[in-house]
Image 1: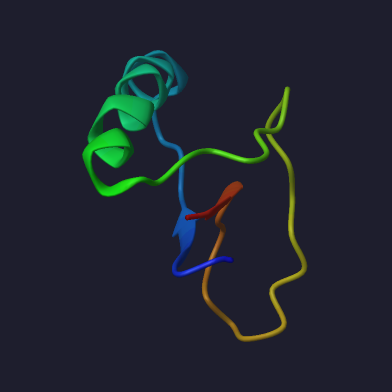
Image 2: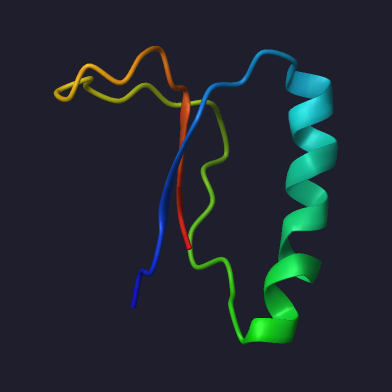
Length: 59
């Protein structure tokens, strides 16, 4: 079950990579988990005029 959708605008790929590595530990105490992770940056259709987001996280 997805409880949150995060739209992420990556401005610094190195910093984002470090951040991504820390995410699983923050979810674990709440029973959360990452079910899918893209191997590369992706583009999404901006149907809702949300800006130039390059990542989507389903938590």
